[in-house]
Length: 145
Image (cartoon, rainbow, N blue to C red; front, side, top):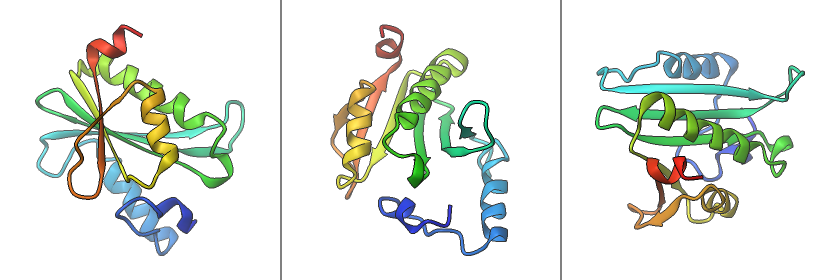
């Protein structure tokens, strides 16, 4: 998580220490937003049968049954299909277990790999807010696949 390349397209700086990273993870692991209105879901992904982590996946589930997803694939594991496999699993889980009606991914327009991933997973581009692009998939599109 200290590789600055992971933060090229996000509005967040790399953790400055192991302690800072631990604090970040503790905040994520609460499972709820500070006001309790959102579910925060987080997964660390590793290669099957190893202790080698490839990245992490996140979802925010809102009371209106919409969700937002995010992910990071560590640099050494990019372009091997892990982001697609993990994100597809997260999307299916959100529809099946949380009955979400739509899922949004916000992507920096310079991030060609994430744009291609969103499109490969069937998310459709919508008008972005500010500098970012929004990609959306509805639950019925997930279950139809």
